[in-house]
Image (cartoon, rainbow, N blue to C red; front, side):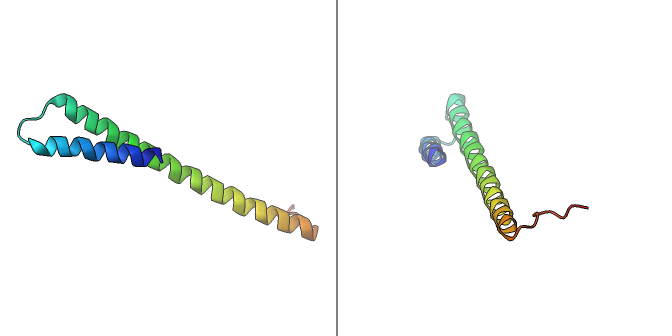
Length: 77
């Protein structure tokens, strides 16, 4: 959700920059870059969190299935 807010903010700043592309202040470019970087960091962290969550869910299901059968989920040598 926060990533979407940063994306919308980035778009608004982009419209301000496009209004006068030849002569916008450097501060506006810095604000634009901050919104863009924050958006990508949040989206990346959401993707990593989702991947970890799915892997934990899969591991948990395998563990419970093996436990219900009375066998260890990993072969012990």
